[in-house]
Length: 289
Ligand SMILES: [Ca+2]
Image (cartoon, rainbow, N blue to C red; front, side, top):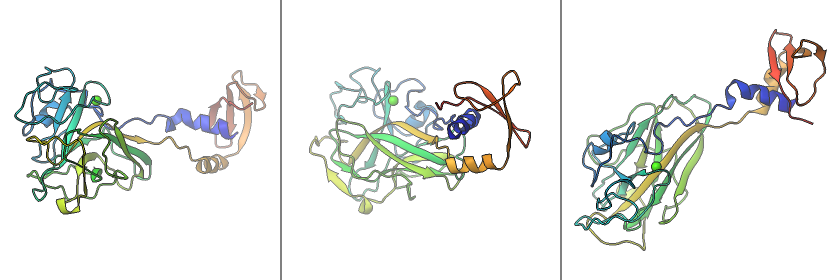
């Protein structure tokens, strides 16, 4: 019976979880852009996403001229600005990249922000995740690359620190130059969040840095730079068996009929109609044997 009830509820809405982040993989863009991104260029190029500060996030493409600074994976751009290092997007042809930290004391940050397709439901549980890869040639890594959920857009008019507490942080400094690292948590929504922002929300003094052995000192390779791809906020399919049985127990089963209306007994692997004392009817196929 438990399996049957779960199946019945599954058909209503529990099994319809979906990623609430539009353009979660950065593949939807308003054309391509060759070069280092200036003010507003991330916002005008990445559909749905925006830069919430004067920091200038980048997009990296595999389908642009290899001589572009932001071509991946092996740009032939000669300088003078240093390359970040080769990294294939985790998905498709496009990924984002942000400074989580620049030069100690400068308090410079880059952030990316996106509105959800629909607000989170208070009390519901969600998986919240993004993938990050440290740029091979960057000077440092950090454990402060986080994700902030908010009910409203957050922004500042400088390239400084957004002073908020992120709900999601990595367990340790992200230092893996070859593999994408999943930064994720499972959260129960306490507010009807409508936005997420990714970046470092701590001051320079509160940002531990770990030296990256692959650091290639060039203009623009100082600090901590991370590639970002594949962002997800999705309600967890977690039928709460206790709750379901409680709901089911409020009403009494009157009878079970088959699709021809003949009263029958519960049986596996066929569609049966469960008729309850409150007039409701559940169409149920059990998988129990
Ligand atoms: Ca992608």
